[in-house]
Image 1 (tube, rainbow, N blue to C red):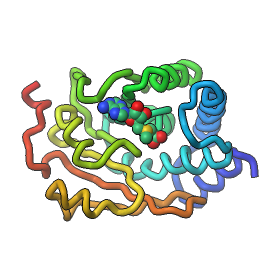
Image 2 (image 1 turned 180 degrees about the horizontal axis):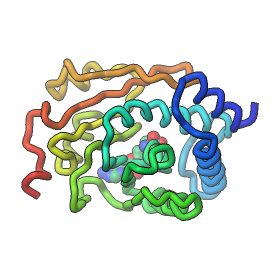
Image 3 (image 1 turned 30 degrees about the vertical axis):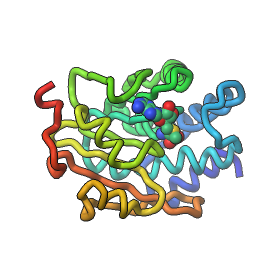
Length: 219
Ligand SMILES: C[S@@+](CC[C@H](N)C(=O)[O-])C[C@H]1O[C@@H](n2cnc3c(N)ncnc32)[C@H](O)[C@@H]1O
């Protein structure tokens, strides 16, 4: 199967709402990533077919969960090559997506993707998230493969809106991490990634249920 066919059949099997035009943009993004990866080593996944599953379909698995929250502003922390932030920006053109990464070459790639693919709803920041000071808080702060949940929350608690949600994309159900932050009852949803024989889970943490005052109110 071609990359386009792997993507299309995965999307159809999962029942996600991703148009043909958006699927082409996702493939254009992947082609750009493959081109840059030869020189800049942005991701360890090098096989083109694996990239469709491990990067595109894996990132798309959170799409229905993000859509269900109807956010206006989303921050993807430690976005790397733009995963899942750029994928979400391409699928949800009305969502303002900010991606941030501490490594300059990764931010440069994301800026190139924004320019080449014309992603008007994407803002890319090169820097450390703990130093990020936006003028407005975010409705969703998401991360994939960034850090343990406790550190993710600690570094971003000044960025979340009072009614906002943290979304942490995880492999196995992170029971101990959630006990460690005093949230053993947190919502953990299994994620479906077509073609992937591994566990994926999404942890949803509403800011108003966390035991602190969001700094965004006083910043
Ligand atoms: C394992 S990569 C994951 C990249 C991407 N989310 C993915 O799933 O492919 C973690 C990323 O977090 C970035 N990072 C680590 N600490 C950071 C910080 N304090 N602020 C912003 N980015 C950070 C790293 O540069 C790296 O690109």
